[in-house]
Every structure is written in structure tokens, then in C-alpha cells.
Length: 283
Image (tube, rainbow, N blue to C red; front, top):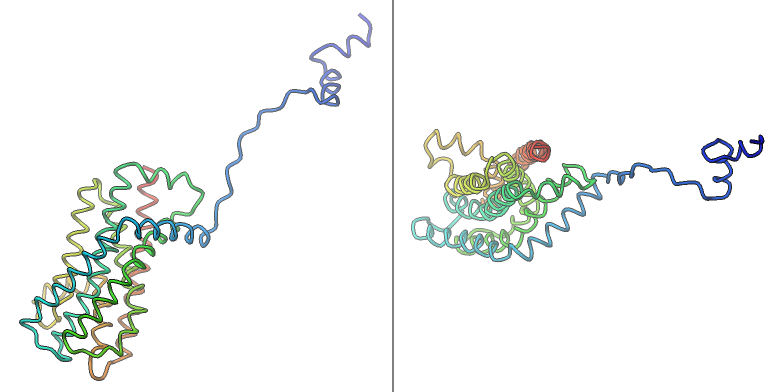
């Protein structure tokens, strides 16, 4: 065999170079590249919008129920609580208003994440290139924002029913997001940590019941053990901040302090929910 034919024989280096120059070389198999990970803020915005759209479609009847429940409680207690800027009237209106947030952000979010975990829906979010914090914060923010109309209607109705001033209701701009973040973080953590969806629903219902029983009564009317439990409830500080604005001379320093505590509890609750999401997503 001549040297020329040996160099051009199939399998030789010269033969492979000739095929590469001619464009007939076989394609090399390469591993598929994963999509780049999305940054926190764009991912959070996308999850927030998707969850808010879902809540508007599926949760409107439940928001009506939450608002009607809170207004019904105020009407029921109006027979035993005098109108005016007394501690009892302020506690009833503030507690009933924040109860709307607890019903949606704590109760429904615990049920949502519990059902998501039980049905394997967390696998869908785990495959997306989004940070875990974006999933938790987006869902929590959407559920908290969804409560705004119900909280405003309840607070205005209660103020008119109990003869309280409306001038301090602007503080709801801070109470709703801060109390909503704290309660939504707690609800998400309960739903993600519960081993079964039924237990997540039970925990959400118990949390909402605690917000009802411990929120609509002034702290002076509660026994000492119940007062300790009230201090541990995230919604308590939002209730205290809103109730203070109904007084004749609100202590704005105390209001700011209560809102600061509510914000700190919200950060801790959302951090716990993010950790619970990571833990549930890898199981």
C-alpha cells in the first residue's frame, strides 16, 4: 500500500482532519447546559405576579368570607362593648381587622403549601432556576397583598360601628404588609413543615383561631398565661399599633416600636419559611 493511501485510510488522523475540513465530521455529543439562575428580585416579582393572579381567581370568595367573619364578630360584640375610644372597642376593631390578614396569609397559605408539598407540586418549583427565597417571599407577598381590600372595609366599618376616629387608618399602610409578612411567613412554615396536608390545615386553623381569640380582647382582660401566648403571636404587634391610633392621643413612638417588632418577627418568620422550603424541596 502506498504512503498516500495509508494516510487517507479511514480512522487515521489525516482522514479525520480531511473530513473536518469538508464539514462531514460527526458532531461531538455535548452535555446540555442548564439555564442561568435568575436573580432574586426578578424571580420574586414573577412569582408574586403569578400568585396574585391565582389568588384573585381562586380566593375571592374566601376573602369575602374572611371580611364577613370579621364584621360579624364586631357586630356580635357591639352588644357587650360600649362605643367610644375605650380599650375594649379599640381592641375589637383592631383585632378584627388584622384577623382578615390572619385568615388569608396564615390559614390559607399554610393550606396551600401543605397541599403543594403533599401533591408533589414543590418538585415543579424546585426545577425552576429561581432562588428558594423568591418562591416563599413571592407567595407570602401575594397572599398578604390580597387582604388589603378586606382589611380596609373591616377597619372602616368597625370605626363607624364603634364611634372611633378614621384619621389614624393610614397606619394600615404599614400594618398590613408587616403583619402580613409575619403571618404569611408563619403560615408558609407550618405548611412546609407539616408531614401531611391535613396537619397543615389543622395548624393553619389553630393559628387563625389564636389570632381571633387573643386579638379581639385587650391584654388586661386576659389571664397571665394567655397574655404570654398573645405576646408570642406575630399579629399582636400589628393589632397594638392599629389600636393605638384609635385613641384620643396616640403614642406614635409606641406605634413605631410595635411596627418595628412586627417587622423583625416578619423577617424571622420568612427566614424560617425559606429554610423549610429548602428542606421540603430536597426530600
